[in-house]
Image 1 (cartoon, rainbow, N blue to C red):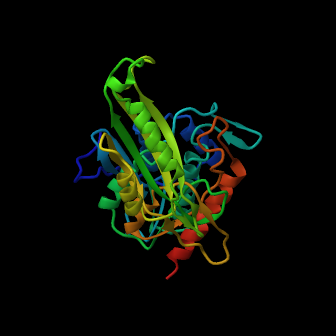
Image 2 (cartoon, rainbow, N blue to C red; image 1 turned 135 degrees about the vertical axis):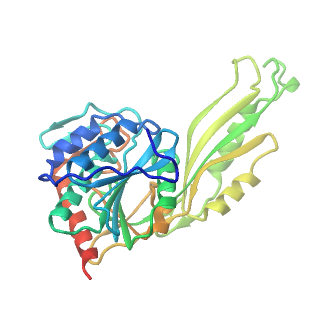
Length: 350
């Protein structure tokens, strides 16, 4: 059950308990399936956890049966910890072995969510009450959770977005242009192709042109990357294909609108462009004395940027995220927890 778009649901408050065991909490989160679009059980668990540990949780509706959760002490927020609860499918069996948490979401990003929740408990014990934890849905697809949250929340001074950054701060990330190309053709016997037109052939030509195009580079984020994620079409090997479709993810180093315009100009009349998600490259704050890195992946940062100055930091490596060996060191979860507390304590100073 979710609230209407104008009335977030607020839970009751109970006395604070001792901070939960971080590794065990992370394992519990990883054990709850929450593929993008199917995050409800994970969000219900988070709501119950927030109440159990004396916080207020508010639902931020995303669609008819999905919602984000904002956890706080119901004071004016100056700093926001945030990460996502949805995952891609698959992954290794959830478990902790030799100090390593395995499973889908271990580093991307349920382990991070556990670190942030424990940090929030630590801050409450230290009488810091102006920090909130925003857990969103849909980051792995269209960032619909972050987009909904940005419309509901009041601005804060800074927000710390959790992604697997190997315990370093992100200084820059590439932009994103995710889109579908849909081609149409005409059926004919493949022995007489002049009587028809293959949408598959046309789409392959277009995709090759996109891959060969000289796209922008930027010294801060690197070059633009093109990935043809899925492609399908046609009805049989001996028939020219009446339709074809491909979904492409570009990690862009230049302006998203200009990139989209150039894609449009490359398309013949029988291929249509459908935009799924778009964002420009992002440049983030790195605290004094900390290491800054550029990353090739996208995040919710561009969709939350209206809320305040963004930072990005988290345990684990993007190189194991989305793989069949996704994992994170439990010690790194603890390191991240301490860093989140440290950052929020600094922001709490007058």
